[in-house]
Amino acid sequence: MNILIELRKDSIIIWLKSRKRTMDKLEWRENLNLSQKLLLKIDKILVANNLTPSDISSVSVESNISDNLTTVRIAEIVAKSFNYYRAVN
Image (cartoon, rainbow, N blue to C red; front, top):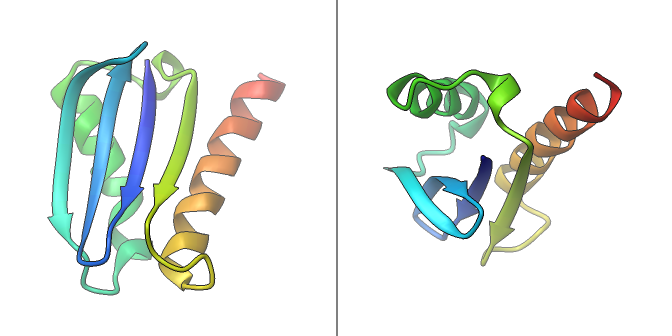
């Protein structure tokens, strides 16, 4: 299982994928509070699908907004942190 965090101009989508097949998705409007919501939303999609973080092999980010925005940086830090943790454990 993989998680894709998709950042759009006005919304955030978390995709739960198994290979190339979409298993679930969670979407909400961006209100400049991604730092408060992102980990909670990832946990919510995992719980809804009876998964734990150890069931996820990678987290990636796709964005159609400027890489200079804090929203993009927050999502990338979460993805890099998760992927680093998976690599060392």
